[in-house]
Length: 182
Image (cartoon, rainbow, N blue to C red; front, side):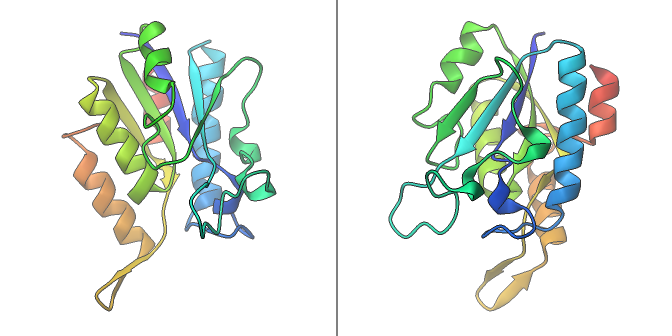
């Protein structure tokens, strides 16, 4: 099985001082960096995804803004490709799927942000495309959500989304376990 790392939307706007700060972004960025370094050490393929907002009224990931830049914890090295996307699903209107298939990738390790939007959507799509997915839960971050007057903490949002993906669309595991299994 050929495994690649997919690094999704680890961008400055999600970190402290950014326009869409996530709970635990620094910690998730550090875990993502741990996974990146393990993949680099083993010379395994790495693919980066960067969200650039193009819809009217967007408030973060604005084109050519520092907030849209990939965060220092996940910056690409050398020839690691970066795919720009404009939707939560990393496969929608990008050449990512073609590159993965061309390179014979059949397993994806996924890290990134926001768990409840882009990570959820991308992981489900990857599973639907037939990839065996490993989602690194502690290398992902999210934020509190509100609906119908009820606010759900970031911790509960994170747990709910990881729980709904685990077993159905991915095996959810911590960075240390994924790195040990490479």
